[in-house]
Image 1 (cartoon, rainbow, N blue to C red):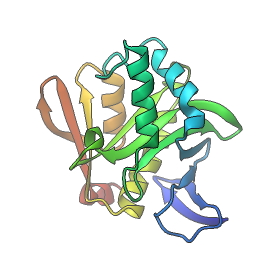
Image 2: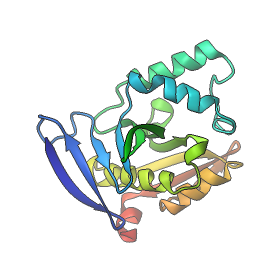
Image 3: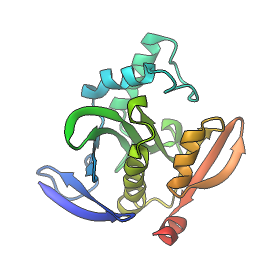
Length: 196
């Protein structure tokens, strides 16, 4: 197992890989003070589906949430898709209970097609408001700029989704555009480095 220690906004996290060269050609697992972020797999399918069905979780997100078959197909396709080197979805688990699914983070081409790379998150309501989104989010922001080498990341957020907008701002993102009910947040590499 290869471990690489990084410092993230004052917190240390580990990038792990098992018996593979230290490259981004394989999914990476991250460890923070309280969390484990590992690549999302079909083993997480039921937990993802249940989270989406929890009250309030997808209220501000467009998707096939009202059609169960389409919803299941959407989750499966997102889990199975290859997003490119260093990109993807990470399921969030409690470090002290690796079976406790808390939500997920993503770093993928915007709407899965690009050209921009978006950061996104979804948390089960039981874990909202406890700093989990920030702790996981700052890890993925660090990964985006330090490991993947991106020049810019974006997050399209419904303007009514106050909690997600606050998280984007806490992660250092700023409003880049306001269009069609969504606010496009962005963070450039230069802005990220200036805030470290």
